[in-house]
Length: 454
Ligand SMILES: *[C@@H]1O[C@H](CO)[C@@H](O)[C@H](O)[C@H]1NC(C)=O
Ligand SMILES: *[C@@H]1O[C@H](CO)[C@@H](O)[C@H](O)[C@H]1NC(C)=O
Ligand SMILES: *[C@@H]1O[C@H](CO)[C@@H](O)[C@H](O)[C@H]1NC(C)=O
Ligand SMILES: *[C@@H]1O[C@H](CO)[C@@H](O)[C@H](O)[C@H]1NC(C)=O
Ligand SMILES: *[C@@H]1O[C@H](CO)[C@@H](O)[C@H](O)[C@H]1NC(C)=O
Ligand SMILES: *[C@@H]1O[C@H](CO)[C@@H](O)[C@H](O)[C@H]1NC(C)=O
Image 1 (tube, rainbow, N blue to C red):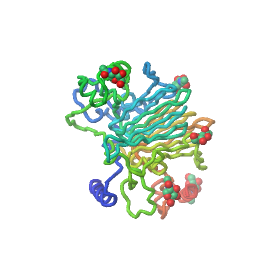
Image 2 (cartoon, rainbow, N blue to C red):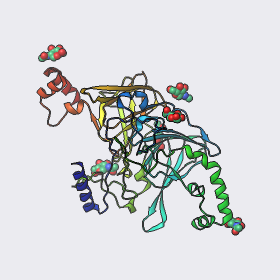
Image 3 (tube, rainbow, N blue to C red):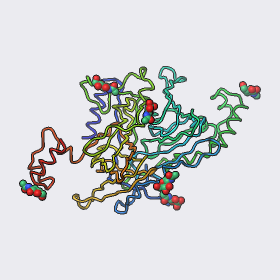
Image 4 (tube, rainbow, N blue to C red):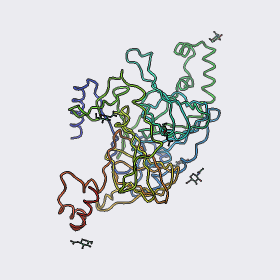
């Protein structure tokens, strides 16, 4: 069924815009797959081996310490703190990673790219200049620079595999969060990964490739071998290729792009649906298609639950089309609740920026489908909690002041399914008898709920 849908979609989109595109989300094969710390394992799988789900705990989905910066890379003026499968084993197979970065004034996060992930960045403090390069299909030696000045609340996206950089143009430290839609995005620094290869590439080739003379090449080699080596701990590769298949393997998938960029056309008049949106001609793309401003302020709170959400997804940032990632800012009033809901096709990583919240999700009990286990945590500033794809979750503000958190999803459009409101507010309505039975309530209670949710 799924395959058939996929092929149809591909055929339709190929027919429509002659450059097929589709949004691709991860496809875990189980509810949860907490990574075993398998230093003794002699096999490599695409991802890590899973722990027995019975032994999983809320701590497998929890990380604390994003409220403070990582250790500065000596001499380079930047510090990174990574939340990935190595320190949050519950991330295994879920296709998402979070990094806090701190960049000193007038310092640059060097040119690099992530072979396996699109990266969304948001800036919490400071001012930065960010850019990425889109190859020119008419001349591979050229590219277009898409760049923006970023202030707190701004969001920018670096599409998968494209070279990018970040420069702190201000006079104070800049702090960022980076979200990657892979559990292992990879990191290729440019040109340093080329100058510091093992075995080394010959000077002749480097001189030709970079159009420099040998003295200059020697100079670059020396630089590449000193400072930049220390960044190897960042986004380290885990269990690389090749791999024998093992029983119960859970592949980690990442989006497969067919174009460098595919900006969504605002196709309210289009009469066809594709899996994702139709692409704009890349010639007409601009940096604004990859930019969003306004994550520094709260949205309007929904009265019933006391929470507000601001979405940075393909509907507000068209450049996200086909890239499989998005961010939401949520603000909770005192005692406010992000009510029970699920996101069909997206795993979420939530990070608290302000206040204290209580977050939980439910893992179905495979032995009794009417039961589930609650995995929950109290989260303070700097804490990170992971909520696997498709599971029911909630976030509650336990304090008497506002709370703010960011949630990132590995989908360009993680439509929420609110529970039970989506059931009580259907069009046409579900019969009272069925609701009464389904929720084990009587009809006056059902009528009461209908009124609240409509
Ligand atoms: C995994 O095992 C290695 C080696 O035994 C150890 O150094 C590391 O701290 C462990 N990591 C976790 C997250 O337990
Ligand atoms: C960061 O969070 C941890 C855990 O909640 C807390 O112990 C620590 O004091 C916080 N540090 C700062 C600088 O706020
Ligand atoms: C290499 O190029 C630099 C900069 O153009 C120049 O100063 C230097 O003299 C050149 N060295 C050699 C050996 O050609
Ligand atoms: C898309 O088009 C609709 C209807 O024309 C409009 O209301 C909406 O603001 C547009 N969205 C963007 C992001 O341009
Ligand atoms: C939020 O950011 C926008 C754009 O940078 C700026 O105009 C606005 O003043 C900021 N608002 C707050 C409350 O900081
Ligand atoms: C429905 O249930 C509520 C709570 O148990 C009860 O107060 C009410 O009388 C019941 N109404 C009917 C019509 O049975």
